[in-house]
Image (cartoon, rainbow, N blue to C red):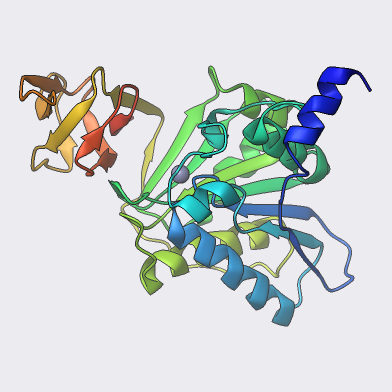
Length: 301
Ligand SMILES: [Zn+2]
């Protein structure tokens, strides 16, 4: 161990990933469920704890490991990012065992929990300053075994909105696909809310996926008829800091349509336009905005 490694270890004690493992001793897949990657997304965190209690009572095949609050420092400070190093966990990959708190947290999450698993489900929702439409996010990987399985899962999931996006720049998704690990991200809940309806949606999507993994018996689920499956997602991001005022948007918007304005602290205004046409899956509703914040995420076919 060199002096630099020693210094890092001295400065940063072991990270606190609290994992709950549930199993009834029956053989089967290993499923990892995480929430709280963004520390102020409460419906996902609540659903993760509920799932751990539910599956202690319900027998299933395989093993579930649940980490309800991956970003514990963010949760304790009521922010999406990690206040120790001001990084977002979701933007960090592959992490490092000797890096900052976020880097070590991500390194441990992948190496100890995700890489030895069959599938990873990451529960998200609208943070304190975000409003969203509930949706499930899946990736098209180019690996036939995974894609055929995913496309048949899409037919089972009860969700009005599903994003099934080809992997392009997402390095973490490339790594998972290469290792044959399935991945799903669920979004339900808005503005830090954790209503019964929002929490139940996460739980139901996990249950459908467990049936599809044969961890639970198969069941024919009546599916909502109007599922929209989008294949692309475009972000409109803030280019300046200040006071964000979002327009009263329709569900579907057109490219170059005005979506709001950012006022600098001296009051000077800059209008923000849509970068694409499509459905607004989530939008920033908080008044403060900083450079790089996602103001709107627009999904299209
Ligand atoms: Zn999130």
